[in-house]
Each structure stands twice: as C-alpha cells, then as structure tokens.
Amino acid sequence: QHRDPDLSRVAALLATPTKGPIPVDFYVFLGQDANENAVAPQASTNIGGTDAEIGFYTLCKSECPTSVVERGGGVSTPLMRFCECIAKLMVEDLSTDFGALLEPELGEPSPFFELGSYTEVDAGQDLFKITNGHGTLGVLMNLAPEKAYARKSERLTVWVAAEIQGPSAHTRLAGTTYLDQPLYQGKP
Image (cartoon, rainbow, N blue to C red):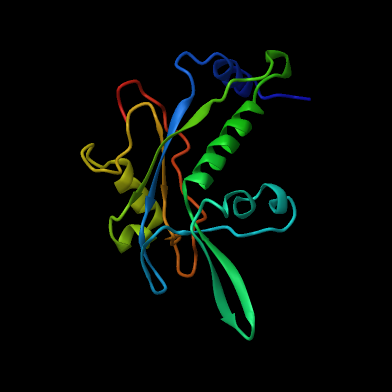
C-alpha cells in the first residue's frame, strides 16, 4: 500500500504527542426552531445501516433532548437536539480518523483529541441559522478573546448551528472549515 510521504511525516508527529490530546471545544448556538425558543440544533436521527448500532440517535437518545414530531396522516418522526453526548462521539471519531494515518508498526496510538468544553450559547438567531456560511466562519475565527464563544489557544473549536446557507441560492453547507488551522502555542 502506497503512502504519501507527507502523511507519513504527519503520522510520525502524531505518534509522539508532547502535551497529550488536543482539546476540542464545542460552542452550540441556540435559537428558535419551529415553536421552540433557545433550543440546540436538531441532530441526526438516522437509524439506517450501521447507524442502527453506532449512530448518534442510537447512542445518545437517552442523553440528548428528544421528542416526537407529528407529520400528519398518522406519521410521526423522532427529533433529537444536539447535546454533549454527540460532541463526545464526534471527538472519538476524530481521534480514530487521525489514528488511521499512523503506520501500523507504530502501535496503538494514544487519543489525539479529547472533549474540551461543551457550551450552549444564545448568541441570536443569526448564528443559529447562518445566512453566509463562509463569511460567518471568518467572523467567528477573528472574534475578540473576551467573547464567550471565541476560539482559544492550542485548541480546536467547533461551532454548531442549525443551518448554514451556501454561497448561492438554494444551497446549504454541511459544514465549513479552514483546513490549514495551525495550533500555535499561545495563540488562537
């Protein structure tokens, strides 16, 4: 199996962490959704395929706020809100994915990431349903440190919204990120 030489260097660096796992902070924006105020975004309730065993709904329905939504005609569906249980699963998945970059001879890696803080933030409907995804990410990345949901030094930050509109009409972003976020010591 061929490995990219740059990935091998990354894997070698990841295999010898100097400070332990990198904390991942979650800021979950609360807002109005249907007739509910100050609620977290909806989370996936998929139970198809492997999600029936390891999906968010299967593993977190007893910890996250859940309800049943009547759709009419005798049809109802479950609704689950994003919660700390989902954040923990996402961090575990992130560690697993980075661990897959390692050369097998390096052995079983330590976790690369750990859940840092989990904070639900009522910062207005504009951050719950974002109309300019990439622009808003730029604003969030450059927040003053005194903002409650500003990123912190030597940590990864995940901001969770209900909707992120895409760059053109009738598009949505499943997520947006800066792929080259270095973790500078002492700087966000």
